[in-house]
Amino acid sequence: MSEFPSLSPKERRRAYRHAIFNEHGWVRLLLTINFHPVGRQAFRSGQLPPWILIARIRRHGLRTVINLRAPDTPAVALEREICAEEGVRHIDLRMYSRDTHLPEVLFEAKRLLQEIEYPALFHCMSGADRAGFMATLYLHWIENVPIEETHQLKLWPYWHYRYARTGILDHFFDSYVAAKRKSGISLDDWIREEYDYEAMRTHFHSIPWINLLVDKILRRE
Image (cartoon, rainbow, N blue to C red; front, side, top):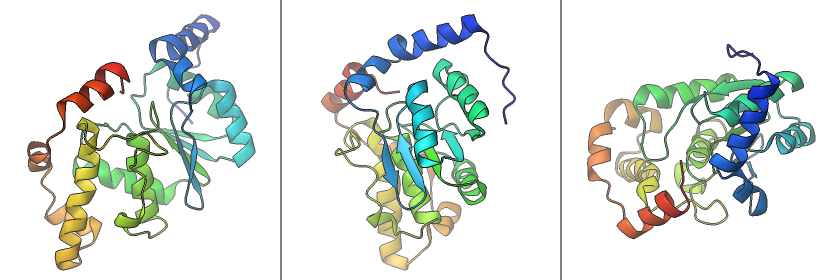
């Protein structure tokens, strides 16, 4: 299920320490792991501690875990091992919380959503931004929910800040919905024919003090 080698006991201990302290996993343990159902067949979350991931896999019968973080993150290495032990498919699809993504990445996400086995979990570090972006795509492409009715990028209960740099994800979907209202264009056709990746990034503006909160205080990835 993975091209990555198994961890040695020393590497496993190091990965645990990194996940809890360097990635502020202790904050997520104390406050929220941001785990939520998405439609009929999926879930979204932040980076789950190993023992919670095992419990969620077994409780919900998860068949696929899609990691939206960098594939070489120590916590993801632990996750990858757990998925192998539990017979769950693990997939790395790197996404970014402050980018709208190139068309090829978006269509790779669609391909994966169409071919994976469900129930599935999509996760990033905090579960607020990238997980919400992927959950929106899942609801639209797999469950045929209109983008404007997906509601996966919200402050409550997901802790997504649309007026920080992470709001570029909202800007992407808002731009599509505006185009759809004019012409009825599908998301796929809009991405192929009208979506301008560079212009999208140039035209989006965030609020500096909210960036300070998200980037420096919350230290979102």
